Image (tube, rainbow over all chains, first blue to last red):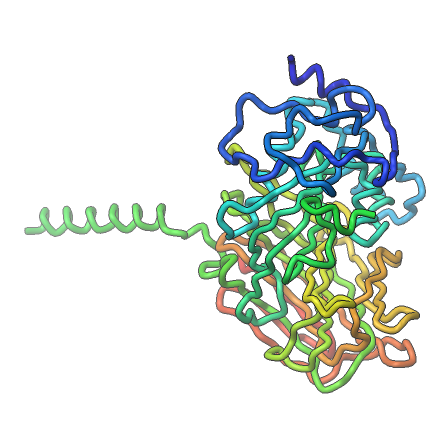
Length: 216
Length: 240
């Protein structure tokens, strides 16, 4: 099947709740060397998500892992409410507001996992990725503040990596960086623009696509 | 003899030019990396505040287009719950950042110039947690000034983060005051560049008033420039 054709089909906005999602469609321990052919994206396979086992599930998936939620790859935010000239124009021209219509560059599940995996120093980390509307991801991360700059329906990848992450921002001067053991990040599914990142020293208390915890 | 000397001289010049062309001569911030960040910052100590406010220009800055995942240049301010650098484990920071991500196929792309905040805190279960959020994409412009504010909210332990006068998030961080403030540049690449940032800084006291910082001391790592021209003002840049 032609991937580009499938990706173009994405666009139907169905804002389902997380509880309505079937717990499927997550890859665990993806092959970071696998780049071609790209695996079809579950969220663009047609029809509402969660209707059955994902075709791209390469390994058994534990109960509790969420499935993709239908979202819009090209939705742009409504910036009409931003009156501050310092950011109103910028938001339209930069970052998540950009319209990337070339679906061949949209980020696949494998690529999403590989992007997130770049941050870990761990070996063979377990990784799970799910594609959801931006508003849902923002809620998982504990804030709704992105809504002004990202269309709530726009697709973002949320990826959890159960692997070590060494912190890279801290108060000056640098002390010995702390190693966190699980992290979850979200980024625009079309452009890859980073939106949120959260890490936990012991893996608890953060949204976790591997376990389904914190995805209410 | 003269010919030989001239030949040696030419060889030396050629060798030198070769070395210079391959040298990290283009590295404006040598020694700065993800493993060893460079700083040009002003500290405020000796006074406990309940928030921080800063304005600074949206100066150009950049990180090179190499294959590292996390290289970046930041211009930002921090509010630490602990009173000293050595003891600091929980804090709020916000400002401007530029960096890039890497595609699985090895190509890289910039995350762009972003307004961001990050928090490092112990959650309600006592678990150390770090969160970072990009607020929005903005365009570098040396003549545009942004406002950054971190201040305590209405509930114990909750902080409000404002960018350009608008509330961007409320974060429950389980601390509610800040005896150590910091502002300036953080460079995590040998190839960082920037124009001059001029940062005008205030602390927010218990009554919500914006006041000058406490005792002010500076830290400027070798490749960077820093200047403390007046009370509660800091300038930094990557030298051209």
